[in-house]
Amino acid sequence: MEEVERVRSFNRTVTERVGALMDSYLDFGRPLGASRVLWEVGAATDVRDLRARLSLDSGYLSRLLRTLEGEGLVTVEAGTGDRRRRTVALTAAGRAERARLDARSDDLARSFLAPLSERQTRQLVDAMATVERLLTAGIVELTAEDPAGDAARHCLSRYFAEIDERFDGGFREAVALPFDSGVFVVARLRGEPIGCGALKDVTPPEIKRMWVAPEARGLGVGRRILAELERHAVEAGTATIRLETNRVLAEAQQLYRSAGYVEVEPFNAEPYAHYWFTKTLKPGTSTNPSRS
Image (cartoon, rainbow, N blue to C red):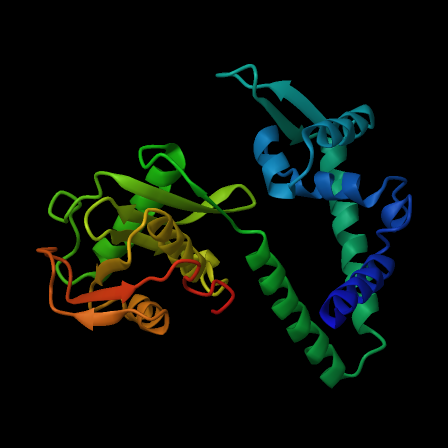
C-alpha cells in the first residue's frame, strides 16, 4: 500500500537524521537507547514505571541500566517497601552527563531548522506536532480492569474532582446512580492511566463514568473508549445501548451525537443528568475510533 511505503520512507529519513543508526549517539560513546534511558531518569524512578514509559523489554532495560551503572551515571537499588521493586536515580556524574546530552540534543534540533526558511521552519514544527499527536494516539492501550483497582480508582477520583468543579452545585458520588457491576475499561498511555469508561450491567446496558484526562484530550481516546464499550455490549448480545450526560459537558454531548446516539426521554433518575441518549447497535459495528 502507498500509505505503508510512505510511513516506511518517513521512518528511514527520521532514523537517519536523528542518528539512531549510529553506535555512538551524539558522540557520547553509547547508542540511542542508553541515552534515552539516561534522559528519562530524573529523580528516583521506579524501574517498572521506566520500562512502561519506554515500552522496553525488561531484559533489554536491565542491560542498559547495568551499562549506565557501570559508567557511574546511575544507581539501581531495591525498593524500601517492596524489595522486588527497584528504583533508579542519577548520580552527580549522571546529572552532568544528562545536561551535556540536553545541550547536544538542542544542537541537533537546531541543525534541523538552520537550513530552512522561516516558513519552512513553521511547516516542519507544525508537521512534527501533528505526527507526534497521531503517533501518541496510536500507543494508547485499552483494557478491561477491576473497577476497584488502583488504575480505575485513580481515573475515577480525577473524574469526580473535575465534574465537582464543573457541575452546577458540585458533585457527590453518593448521590449519583452507581456503577455496581459490568465492564470497566481503563485507557493507558505509556503505562499511566489517562481515561476510563464503564458499561453498566442492566437491560439495556448503560455507559457510565466516561472520562479522559485533560492532558490526553485531542487524541481520540474518548471515542476509542466508547467504541470498546459498544464492542462489549455487542458481544453480550444487546442491540441497544444507553447513556446520559450533564448539560455542562458539551464535549461529551458532541461525541455522543457524532457517534450516532439519539436524544430520548429520561430513562433513569440520574440526578446529575440533563440529556439521555440511546443507540441501536449492529453486530460487527461500533463507533469509529479513528475519528476525532
